Image (cartoon, rainbow, N blue to C red; front, side, top):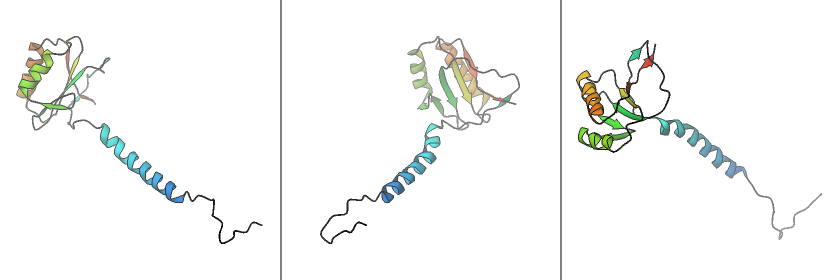
Amino acid sequence: MRTISQHSLASEINVTPMVDVMLVLLIIFMVAAPLLDQGIRVSLPNAQTGQPLDQPGLSLTLTKEHAIYLNRELVTLKELRQKLTGVSHNQPLMIRADRNAYVSRLIELWDLCRSAGFSEIRIATLAE
């Protein structure tokens, strides 16, 4: 049996506080990670004949408030026109339009993309 005198130092490390802190950090990251990955929320329309996109490309989002996002960056129509002329037109362009957005606004975006030189433009839908 080992005895510890009053003048000797205890050489054992208490790891309980460190484990507690690590578990709390793990829980925080588990809760926060899915929130970081979410993009702009839109309620996509349903379609029976939708097809999956085989290669990724640019993403253009139109919200129900008619805000426009190019790859998660809020842009105006003028900024969008400038940015689309500066990218490669060989990639597909996916328009994610909220089901409550005006069709006239969607057509305006479609025309802008076509005039910028994009030939492969798709509209994102949900499968029924």
